[in-house]
Amino acid sequence: MSGNQALNVNNGIGGFPSLAITNHGSDWYFTVCAIMALTTLIIMGMSFGRPRSHRLFHYITAAITMVAAIAYFSMGANLGQVPILVEFPRPGSSAVGAAGTREIFYVRYIDWFVTTPLLLLDLLLTAGMPVPTIMITILADEIMIVTGLVGALTRTSYKWGYWTFGMLAFLYVVYSLVFVGRNHARALGPESSRCFNMCGVLTIFVWFLYPIAWGLSEGGNVIHPDSEAIFYGILDIIAKPVFGFLLLSGHRNIEPAMLGLNIRDPEAGVGHTGVNNGVNNGANNGTHEKRGFFGRNRNNAAGTATNGTTAANTTV
Image 1: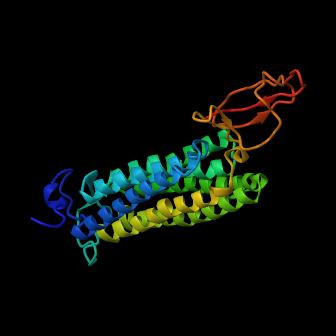
Image 2: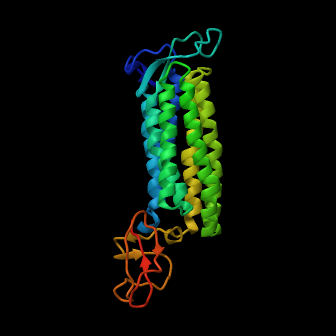
Image 3: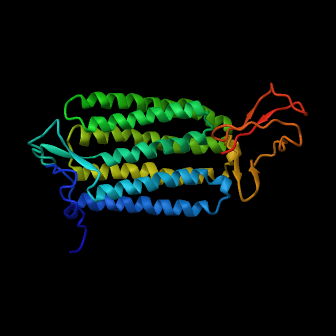
């Protein structure tokens, strides 16, 4: 036997939906898997050319594409799916016919539950956003993904209620990026602002297409699962590998300390700040060092020290 035998080998695992991907859909899923895996290797290779203190965004972005590669491998193998009764059978449709059940890939939502917060973390750290804003934005994103999954697994019209909840959460994410994030990025300087705006616009544009894809596939049962695979696959390629390379390109001239990130390089033996701020190690100039979360640098004017200043340095 030659060629892609995944559908034959895994036939019946997860159920027998009357509307499922064909070998064409499986081949496409494996193709996207290869793109995601290759992107991961390239990004990790790029990270070796940077100091350890400058690899945070490489690691986050590589994690995004690696998780996506695993998810697409699962979907190409026709695993991580379950048959769900469709709300709209559409017997007159040439695409979906009179299918009673449709194949729903829950593994896709597991992928998004892991990768979309990481993608937002890439963006929000680029803008130097404060930790509370990062946390609430990521929470809204998780709500969006979970409601999308529950809606996809719901047969009745109540699925559109979950779609609405997900859209409300998505609109908050858009608000956080467009209004809050852009202002923070602008305050950090032209390099951060340019990188954030470029990647933010791409993300918002692509993410607005996902609810449409959901409505045509899991929601409305309008397009065939093979077409669903192509639609989501193209969106994911743009939202992950293309986004990742744009982000890392924009970070070439951005020092972590510019974003409030003070990341220690263990091989250097000292914290790498990239900024000559005149603050030594606290013991020499009487400054008080305070360690916190996400490597944020903060100054506390109320603190007292030998030189009358207090610096708060946070280490990742």
